[in-house]
Amino acid sequence: MYRFEATQLILRHAGDRPIVGNLGPTSDELRHAGHRDRNFYTYGNMGLCSSLALGMALGTSEQVISLDGDGSLLMNLGTLGTIGRESPKNLIVIVWDNEEWGQTGHQPSHTAMGTDLEKVAQSCGISNTATVRELEDLDAIFQTALNQDGPWFIVAKIQETDYMPVAPVEPEFTLYRFRNSFL
Amino acid sequence: MTWAETIVQSLKDWNTPLIAYVPDTSIDRVTSLIDDDPFFHLVSCTREEEAIGVAVGSYAVGQNAAVFMQSSGFGNSINALASLCIPARTPIPIFMNLRGGTGEFNISQVAMGKSTKPILDLLGLVHFTIEDEYRLDEVLNGAMKLCHAHRNPVGICMTPMLHGGKVV
Image (cartoon, rainbow over all chains, first blue to last red; front, side):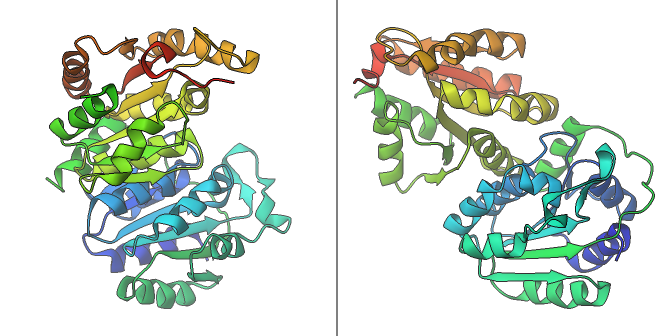
């Protein structure tokens, strides 16, 4: 599956739930798939996408969706331990796993060499997990996650393709729009 | 009130219920009070930049948050401050045990400890150093007010002169 069609699928089911996008193409494609106040695009802070989502899940009763990446999560695997320790029922982490550092020259990431992020999550005490390769399988497991207590951790294996245009880089507006929707 | 109780009261006065931290001996007197107080949710993180991320997430959904760490961990959180907190404008108070000064026994703590305030200056972040309890409530209240007015992190650097430090 491609990240953009998978992102469109997530948005179709997400309703008004807050979504955090990992930096780079994940946030760009989230914006192109459907700009909304409750998209929290990130532009830096590599590795912190799911940590941000964890903080959100601890601050609101609404379900929070993290769209993370394999390279970014590998930079901050400890946060899976924190998610397991806190176990917020309202957190759904989805990892777009292209098995490479796509933005820096397509170097293979550790998930191409044997690291199994789903097993890492399980060993951190996150019991609701899945790894999917097809769009229809992501559709099914995401709808299950929306209807059952989490935390959820879903690895979606994706194929890298051409990047979409870079979305506007406006971190202050992003935070302002997003936060205002909770006040 | 002890200095630790004054910090806890200040966090309450500024309605800051989420505290993300990496444990530290010297500030344990504050974080253990926080852990026992139902007003707060204390989140134990694996690394200081992760704590910044968790705190910003909480703020982003409308719940104020603060971070506790020691100055060595401040070194681990610089990119989170530079690429997230500053461009997004997030008022996150950062309480730090400032190592590397009076009574330091560990050579490995000195360079980061002595660099912490200059790095905060380079980032344009305001910081306060607390050495004793004199007018502590006023300093904390003022620091929190500035933090929210500036919508940027402030550093609150606590030295061993305040908390006794880690001794060997």
